[in-house]
Image (tube, rainbow over all chains, first blue to last red; front, top):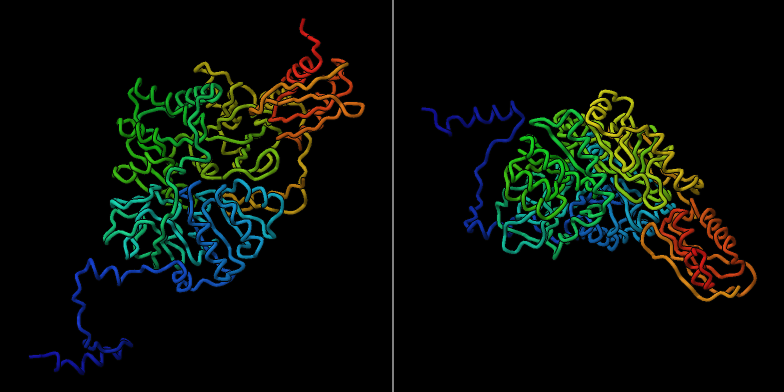
Length: 512
Length: 92
């Protein structure tokens, strides 16, 4: 009989052939601790400073953040302040988006801690300073799908990702909600953090609720996580729906919403199994109400609703009008709670949401999208990033992704905002190319892209007033007079990247 | 023409608040603060000036805080402020 001892020579020879060592039994005693106690000391939990030190972060490297807490985010300011205190310089900040709350970054840019930024959007004082030439390197702007692609292809290489989460266990399984009684925050989907978690060299989860293993269901898996940092608060959940989102009682918004709903209902795609995404503008949210009424009246069901999911969409899903919710970002607490509790409310990464190079991403199967705009021009190009004063004041978001991939893209905007015209000769900054925009809805009529004559026919047949977009421009100009040119300088402060990686436009500095 | 302190308009978006006071020196002195100053500052000043001159107000201190008002709104607010400042009703 062959025993282990008999085979020793053969094992050794085989190991030699394979270039491996021979197994030696360990002399160490097995850890007999109760595993609920053991996980506490064997986990990845460290302080923020330790996590930064152990991550191997060096000057010149790239750090990343998500923006799921929107106006309530505390992670970016907290981490960058710590990095400044530790003496880091020349870092590249790759955020999924930045907003008003990130004004403290101005000081860190001035002191050289942050020297490059990539983001989807900028708002508030930070945006204002950058528009005036605060940074030497231009800010790179990408759509959400574009950022996902750039991370997946390595165009944006993230050295260390700092990802806020509303719950995490010591192993690193993390979520945008918590099921524990100590839950402090909720942001719902962590979709924009998922590419970072998957592709960053090192991932630090920052949480305000450390729970026992296993924290399932989880958005981010422990296999992608290196360190877990516990803090008092990662974000103020009450501010998730601040910023872009508002519920409108404005009669003009309601008129716009009714017109948009008519386009949806009569555009040729309002049939059983359709799919839809709506933006966060007041008119866009109000349109959902009219679409819902029509769906009930005609007995039509949507297969899925996509995007930024709002309470409106959750309600229609719960009523059985929408089969699935595909959620890259929860736009309010109701949506976040639904994501937590409803298996048909699916969390997706930015890539699965809207990347051009991911054939299965949800935007590819999207029938209709309602989007807002700061400006539309006579060639149907759209700007959602730079204000008519030349100052950056918005975010690209999924605008160009959904416009490009959907069967019918609808832009809803008033003709004028105060004295600011929304239909112009040429947009201040090109964000969503006119070739991807099908319909522009204003309170003075609906313009259809000449590339879609069949659409114009259908809408006319339904009795809608279709106008030439040049007439809308003329009407706006008549009311406001001719604006003087903006005082742009000759320094490039921003670059708009196309979702497929080319350079689409640049933003020049503004001179006061 | 005698001018008293007077005001018309609000700080709402799309409106303009116009304050008129006696001039310290001769002429119209317009102090304009506008959210659309870069593109429309000159035009707004011109409309204020023309409206006041048209009403016979040639010496006044004007402070205007504009939140993107259209020319018709600017004319209406300036006229209302001028009527209050001069006590001369132009609508009769």
